[in-house]
Image 1 (cartoon, rainbow over the protein chains, first blue to last red):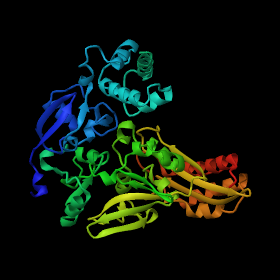
Image 2 (image 1 turned 120 degrees about the vertical axis):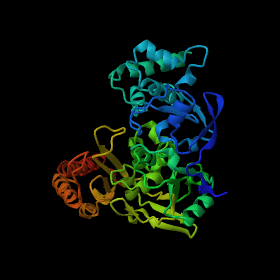
Image 3 (image 1 turned 45 degrees about the vertical axis):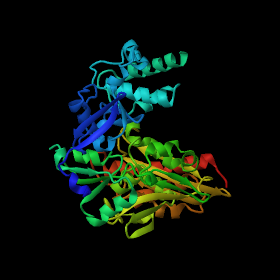
Image 4 (image 1 turned 30 degrees about the vertical axis):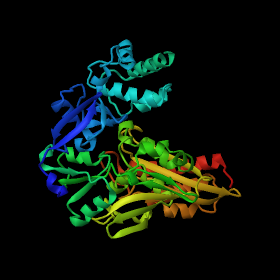
Length: 165
Length: 292
């Protein structure tokens, strides 16, 4: 097969999204962000800047926090993806979501899904983060409403809750 | 104008030989893409010159960090996160681990690669001055074979490199002989995360008998390419650090750089900061007083 025959052709992408196997037909250079929103109707993942600066489109790709606006879907074949919707499929509310609610960590809500995924990723790597760890873990996620303090409080709250449990 | 994905192709050969064959067959046609943190930004803005991309994110040999007694070899598609989390990189090459921690935010560090940073060839890249002071060597590979090149010879001009159109950067090799050096890295930018540096510095030095025995300084965003400050280094070698030497070094550094005005800063500000960073480096070195 001529590998360059892909120009202008859609390809089949088989991957796991929020624990479910999904198959979509997409151009390989379509952004993962667009496939999630438009094909799978997972509109919790937001587009802010579209150039990897703001973190609104953060998702977990094979457990790694990524900006889905910078991932061509052709690179996500076979991957396991978690979006903000994947954190609500549990019977009880995800502790990080609960923390944002408890601490007033959300205002307009555009950055919130990305913030929560960045926080989940941080707590996976550092279950007991310092304030400096929290600031660094969320440094790629911009919020224009809250001034960040309530968000940092929420992550610290979630960490304490997780450790206590 | 946003790019139309229907006009682009992305192939995933999945192994290095197949990637190199494609590049050799129609070299100007293809653009390799690893983590996409630079390529996808241009693509989304409709400014990517190539319409045909080759996925090199899934090539295992490009993702390895191999440790040998005398050097470490970093696969070109190793991410900033992989560099930060690697024990030997953190311990023996702290300038590189620190620069990796400044690059983008965590999501970009999980995708951005050292080889991508080199190939993108921005004079503002934070991870490139450390490669200069650590005497890095790059391995360039194509179907014609592989060649090793001192990293200092890689950048030939603004965004111009020694990489041939059919070549790929395979790895970056660092000699393990700087672990005993004093090292200091500093970035000046609007903020550490996400913001691109106005000026950054990577420095290494060894003191013997109260004198500077070996000193290596490199800076980003002060010239068309990441710059090693050879004249300043030469002037300082063999000297004892005191206030007058620091002032002389500050002037030597300002003379040696070629900063410009752009959206992030001005030439005048950059020159002042570059001088200050060299002075700060020497003050910290004197305070550390590391005698080998």
